[in-house]
Structure formats: C-alpha cells, structure tokens
Length: 317
Image (cartoon, rainbow, N blue to C red; front, side, top):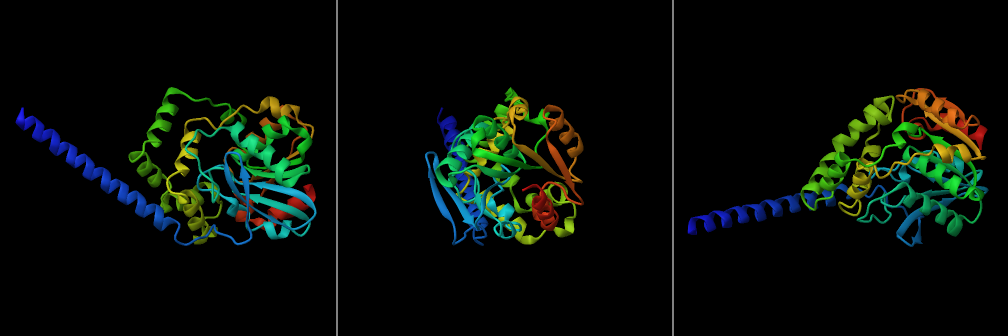
C-alpha cells in the first residue's frame, strides 16, 4: 500500500511538473508573438458592443463601406490595409476587427454565424447609422448574406470576396467535430495544440499554399501580422477556431441568398480552387449574382493584387 501511494505521488508530481512546463511555454509563445505590435494603430475607436469591446477604424468621407475580414483567429482588419486609403477617397470606410479577432475582445464562447449577424446589424445601426455597402471575405460573406436577409434596409450592396461553397456552409456539428472542438478547448493541451496550429511557419505555409497565388509575393510583415492576431489576448483565439472546426460557424444560406434584392457581386481569385463552381452554385440560387475573377490571385486578392481589386470596385461601387 505504501509503495502504491509513493508511485501515485510520483505520478502526480510529474503531472504537475509537466503542466507547469506547458503553461510556461504557452505564456512565452503568447508574449513573444505580440512583441512587434503590428496591429496597434493610433487612429482607432472602440465600439462597446454588448458582448465586448470591438476595435474599428473610420476613414474618408462619402457613402459608407463596411469591410469584414475573413473569419479566422489569424485574421484582422489588417487584411484590408492595402486598399483602405484608396477607398477612403470616395467613401467613408469602416474597418473592424470582428469579435474574437485582432484587437477586439475574444470570448470563451461558442461562436456562430448568428452571433456575427447580430454584431453586423448592431454595428450598422449604432455606429454607421445608414445603409452600407459591404465588402466581406470568406466566411464573413455568409454572415453578410444572412444579415442582409435579416435586415434588408441596412444594406445597399454586397461584394463577396471568395465566399465559401454553399454545400460547405450546409455542414452541421457532428460527433467527430464536437470532439475536436472539446479537445481544442482544453486548458493546457488545447492551448498547446492551438499554438502549434497557428505557428508562424504554419501561417507562412498557408499564405504560400492557399491565400496567395504567387508565393514570392508573401511579405514577412503579412505573416507577422497574422501571427500576432492569432495570439493577441493570449490563447482566446482558440475558441473561434474551435467553433469553426466544430462546424458551429456554418449556416445554409440558400434561402437567405434567394431572398435578397440588393446587388450581389462575387470577386473570386482566378486561381482559388473551386471558385468557378462556387460562383455557379450562387447564381443557381440567385441568378442576379454578378461575378468577376481576379487574375493570378487566390483567397486574398485585395492583399495580393490590390490594384486589380480596386479597378473592379470602381466599377461595382
């Protein structure tokens, strides 16, 4: 009995020691990742939303534009920095760090499409105060479509940059996705897994393989900014990521898309995998959807080839 207690005590001591090491490593990674301060800007405001403080920047004058970056813990309003100045010459541009992203508050919650729909509606009503044209990337495109269907009077036009495939958006949480979400949300091991997923080399590879068409165009500052965004506020970015892999961020938008009367334009990366098929699916649901493919780009054409995107926006806005 005595030996058994000694063994249990030894195991317990080892576990505490291991947990302390993991905690220290996680803290070190988190602190170092935000040391370059890429995301901190002087000319930003805070919208005190009911679910947390939201950072945003307002520039220019004219008809309002709301820019919604990709919904990912690595993303932030930095995504738009190469086109904001040009857009601001003709429009009042609102560039937000969406909840759970960038400098905005990151909650220990399950994020959903409707959570972001409510944010977009509240932001337009409380901050902008008039109908807007929206530019939205990736998953934020589905949020924009749903919000427009929910409150059509708040929207003038939707510009969707590489929106997800409609069939992808129809996913629902499964037993496997719930387990993946729960594992990532574990206090120590989940944080370590999250930090390994958003490691700087992984982000650099994501830029080269999926986000950009030309890997030589990937600047070090892009990787640093995305790396910092994923670690700002510590490990809390993992809850958005967990909600995405848990399939809680997806929503079938076919009914919403079909009901919209506002102009909808899809700007797709010409080299984005499956984009031609995605456009056809959207047009099958709503034949009024217009589309343009931006040559030699993938998921972030406004960051990779801003001049080409601005040329198209001059036509559609």
